[in-house]
Length: 517
Image (cartoon, rainbow, N blue to C red):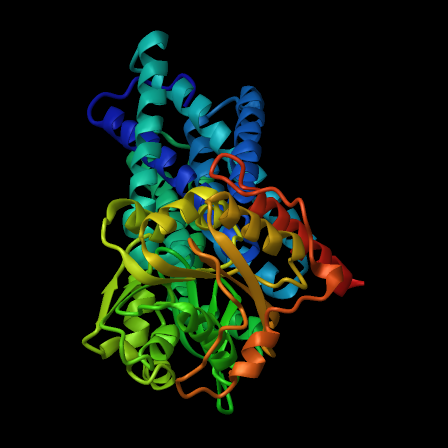
């Protein structure tokens, strides 16, 4: 349709809608690929940076290649939309399949290939549409129309993705649905401009459109079954609960009597030994606290730490701050989790607030006798800020004069540099630190750090609540570290320079490579 008989009527509206939806779909695909890769591999900065960089470069290649397209440009545009819809809509299912059946480099290779293909096809869209639209507008107006509509579609995509698609549909179904939407752009143009298109080529594209549409329909119909199959391949025990919240993948598994919670594939607890972790996290700092009336728990929305805190009868209120409302809901309504936490989240002393821990500490002014930070490891920049000097300074401000702070601090054996970086960051917030560790079979050795304004005597520990693991003698031994894992001169992590993230990923990558040998 480079120079057909001029068409009058609403054809301009059809092309304008096509430009807008094309921009919308392409950005959605890149957001879906980046998010899925972050879920699977962590380090979201790297995943989004790779996606954006490769995508923009591939768009440039596509724009360059568009000069080779001649003849009926509208037919070629429709063909591009069909192929883009097929590849973009299939991108998340493909990544799920590859992750379940390949290694890290296999996954990264396929991810980059998908980004390149989507970028090239997107790069073809704008020049082809601009050349088609020259039938109706002079070049200056034509280019501004095409680009502005494409960018507005991209803006809508960035708003839809976090506020609607992830919370309500998840990455898998969103991918398929936008593949269909992309396909419908081609189908709309195919139908509307049918009288001016080559009959044989039109039939081929129609058959391709209906075939891809049928494929997406089947994928959507079997989406839950496919997700269950792929998830089952990633976990050794049966999945009894699965949810993709706006913040993370939530999976509960059950093997025999062992119930396990995974967030983004990382184990959070095993019901067989979680008491070792939670007793160590809660009772040792509580034993140092002269007052325990008001307790702040950052994270720990599944209620297991709350169960332990409630053993201290002088506790009057417990604020539980967890970013993900789905975790708080799981603690209250899931029978498996509720059984493990012994209904702790229903206790009238508990005040559960779905909010970011950093924001809560910055905005609130109340003081707490004990602050317990049970937050995920610093696997990305968002979590790394919760182990920064600035975060610990905020925690210090929320402590009562004789208050006690404690944080989980990853594995001192497997992430040694990161563990001592957290210790340095707390010291940089002008707090005294007292590192300790406990052995939890599901995790291995796990580290914690107590901090306070006043100096503490680590021998002054008295465990006076019912426990399965801790007693006074065991508690004192937890403060002993082998000399080969004690590191000095590790820099503090800050918001500007999140050293803890770099050190954490470096430590865990080292062990991952060792395990692959």
